[in-house]
Amino acid sequence: MDKINLLRGLPAIDRLLGTAKVAELKQRWLGRLVDDEVRAVVADVRAQIQAGEDPGDMAPDALAERTEVRLACRLSPGVVRCINATGVVLHTGLGRAVLPRSAVEALAREVAGYCIVSVDRQEGDRIRRESAVARMLCALTGAEAVTVVNNNAAATLIALNTLASGREAIISRGQLVEIGGSYRMPDVFAAAGVALREVGTTNRTHEHDYADAIGADTGLLLRVHPSNYRVLGFTHEVGIEELIALGRAHGVPVMDDLGAGALIALAPEPEIAASLRAGADLVTCSGDKLIGGPQSGILLGKREWIDRVRRNPLFRALRVDKLTLAALEATLALFLRRDGPGDDHPTLRMLRMKADELRKRASSLCTRIRRGVPAFEVHSVRGFSQVGSGSLPGESLPTTLVSLSHKSLAASTLARVLRYGRPPVYTRIVDEHVCIDPRTLQPGDDKDLVQVLKELA
Image 1 (cartoon, helix red, strand yellow):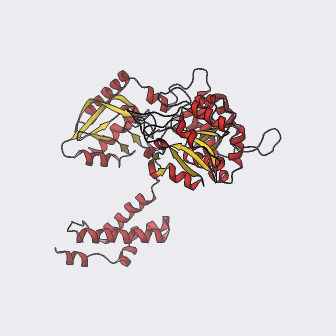
Image 2: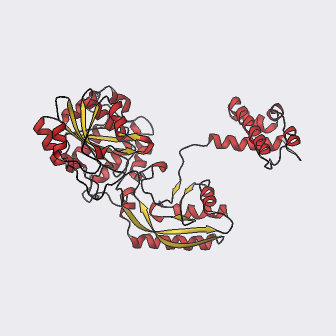
Image 3: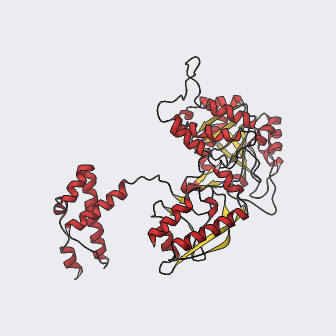
């Protein structure tokens, strides 16, 4: 049948709207929403015909069934549990840090109904909503004061605006970073109302570069840790201790933007406490990277500057909600234990996994797939995991990958089909094979992964 006759055979929109299936859908969902999907189905079929493709069954009832499928896809939640088999521990697209079980339980237990957020128990007066988090972080880092906003980008923005609005902030040219989503330091300076004064070169900046730039308009000396890249070779940068000494000599505050935020030693990431001990006036970092909590931006430092940040009109727009506070408190509690966070801290557990453990997990998964889904060819290969989200750049973590192939599916097709599994499975492709990294599989994922493969087969 030619295109013209196929197009003429398309049922009219009114006819589709009159089917029993569409009437049933309108009993459950907004009428205009169903109407939109009916029109979208007809447009899809028309496009298939014009492209010379087989449109399939064009009977009204069949197109009504397609409408139901499209509607289900449109109304399905966007945030759903998935299996991260990529080996990227802090995967930005998959929610970054996996929350500790204690944080998930706190969300279900403490925030299910009314909960105390910013009211004092003893007097009943209003208090700072992040008071509990601040006490924990002061104990962990030695900071005089702490506050929290919704992410580290917000922390950097409000800190610059508070400390140096209408003035200059001096930064090394090699630290004018860009992170995901085209977030660039020069643009943040502009948004904060701060004049950018860059010194030194991309690979080498010296103390005298900062000293020569300090003048009457200088409001801040800023160090930005290059979280998502590393400059190697003929390099030099000014240490935070030298920068703080220079700031004190000229009466200029010093801010240290650490990015990932390490509460414990995770070389080469700088520790939060080390910057504070050196005398930094303000330190900023993420709460959802190496700390392993919910998305948040943490500001720590001298009480004078934290108080000024909280008085900034931007603070209310950037503050965190009860869900973030509950999850962050539970996460930080793991670091307060005498023996520190153990395997119940998912991010640190995955980063600390040994080669032997990964090899055994890969071998076990290979066996389960061979027994349960013989349609796939599977074997283990050496590979590397990544920390992700701009943390520990250049640090590759040795792992053992499970390599999958299917006789009739290309690797890209297999990877795409897995993303439509229940739950969705995200993998990576190496040498035209779909690879699963056991490092980022959570408890129970092995079983679910095999079930997804069975359904696919």
